[in-house]
Structure formats: structure tokens, C-alpha cells
Length: 403
Image 1 (cartoon, helix red, strand yellow):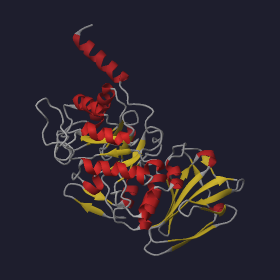
Image 2 (spheres, helix red, strand yellow):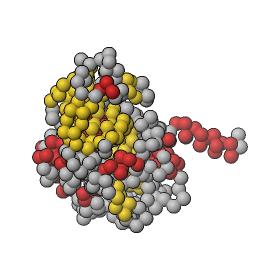
Image 3 (cartoon, one colour):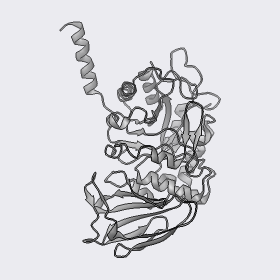
Image 4 (cartoon, one colour):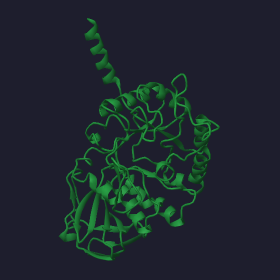
């Protein structure tokens, strides 16, 4: 076997043996990320405080488990051996001690880096150091890696994420791999065997339906994020272990309580990871109630694992539908109007079905009990039309279960 053939053979073997860690993210991951509220203004006291509140406020019991430090946790340069260094002013006890603290609370810890030379905030990226960085994360006990896509020049996205996946696997510690290249390279077409979640849009911002420019890129409000990929074949490829990521949530970051409810309902019905982006240490009781609504979270965690889809949009009231286990359904009626809206939904005139799951409601042959998930009460059956008043930018989120 000549040298060229041997190299090709070894490359093919490496590719075939490469894999991500299985058994992670069987349902969409839940946790908290520092970026939306704190950007690079992060430190170990913040992380410890967040971890404490996870336990104290019942967030851990609600299913939130990952605490993820985003960009800005390291020094501006690697050490003489090429290793990343946790900023000693922000993290005087060191990253290993901080990870151990989070683990002591029964939680998991995540970090951020980037496929390019520099991260989006100008810190050292992983280009050329993937295996070295993966070993470092493993030595610290890191459980989650968010991997961004800044300063990548002519890098190929698929190959770059393949490389980091392989590096994490080689390091030997199971790590949930979060792909963050903003959907520019259609990760839903190739990332199923690479990462456990992949961003399908650009960055989110805390508004209902706005777009905020930042020069060469922009941030989008909740509804613009939802609209970005509605015509793409993203829902067909999502499922246990591989999820579409609509970005960290802005619940509790300045929108109205109604908009927060709609935001949370939509992330749940779309099977997006539920990663909080607010300061959980000071959030209101209303925000906490939204984020810990177990009935809405159960929609996100449904074992069928099929994201919802837009069923209709009439009079600026959007109806989103998600097939559920045991022939059930979750439905969100979103009022996008700036005035209160009335609905009168005749089940017999609106046949609901889903080609992906091959599930069809057939109300002529079945009766379903209707459960209001934010009202925490049953509100009738499909034998009668559903009538309700929905506030401005608010949601009526229901589940249907066969009687």
C-alpha cells in the first residue's frame, strides 16, 4: 500500500469511527446561558449565584440543568503551551473549582468557544487547537460546549464542526455539542450526527417583532426568529438527540408578560432547547411562573419529539400545532394584533393533521379533552367550538387528549 493510499485509508477509517456522544439531549436541553443579559461581564460569583438560584427557586426541579458561560471567560491570549486560560480576575478560583461547585448542586456546566481564530468578542478561538481544547474541557469536567462561527475566513463549516466533534469524543468525557453557525450553512442537512443542537437563525434580541442592526449583521425579535425558517425542511430532521435551536430565550428580559408567555409557548411547541437568558437571581414571580410551567415544559419534552408547525394565520392570529404521544396534540393560538382578539374555533371545520408524524385528529370519530396550559384547567372538549379572548401578543396554549 503506497503512502497516498494509506493516508486516504486512515482518513476514511477516522471518519467512519468518528461520532458524537449518544444518549445526550434525548429531549431538548434546558438550562441558562450568560450572553443575553451579561455579554462578557461574567465572573465566578455570578455563576455560583445562578447555580444557587437553580436549586432555591425550583428551576432544577423543573428540568433546567445546564449553566453555560458564553464568550469572555478566558484571557485574551493562550499560555506559552497554547492552552486557554480562565481569566484570573473573573475566575480567581479557577475553572475546575467553579465546575466542581456547579456539579455539587447536581447541575451541569458548559463553556463557549469558536471555530475561528478569535471568538465573536475577540478572545482566542479553537482553530488549530481543537484537540488541545477538548482535553482541557474534559480535565475541568465540562458537560456542554457552545461552538460559534466568528473569524472563520474560508473555513468549511461542516469540516470544522466535524473536527470539534471528533476532538470532544477523543477527549473521552461526554459533552453536549451545541453548533452555533446561525443556520448560514443549513446545518439541518448535515449536523444530525455532529451535534446535539444547532442554531437555525441569527441572534435573538428582547423584542416582539423587531430587527436591530449591528453593522454587518443584525439581531431579530422573537417573531422574526420564528419566521426565518418556516419554509425550510427543519422539522423533519429534528428529534431525540438532535434539535433545532432558535437561540437562548429572552423571557424576563423586558418584554411584556404576555409576550414572555407566547415566547415560552413557541419555543416549547417548536422543540427548541429551553435555555434561559435572563438574570434568574432577580426575576419576578411572574417570570418564574412562566419558566417553570410544567405543563408547557411537558410539551417541549413530549416523547414523540416532533416539532410543531404553523397550521393557519387568519386575522393576524397564528395557530401552531404539534403532534404528541398517545395521539394527543398541543396547539398555540398567538394573538399578533395590538388589540385583544376573540377566537371561535370550530374543530369540525378545521381538520388537523401532520404528514411528518402521520397523525390526524379526526374529531368526527374522536372526542378530545381541552386543557389550558397557562390557566391550568380543563376548558371543555372538541364537541363544541373553542371560544376565548386572547390579550395583546398573548397566547392560548392548549393540549388535546383523547377521552
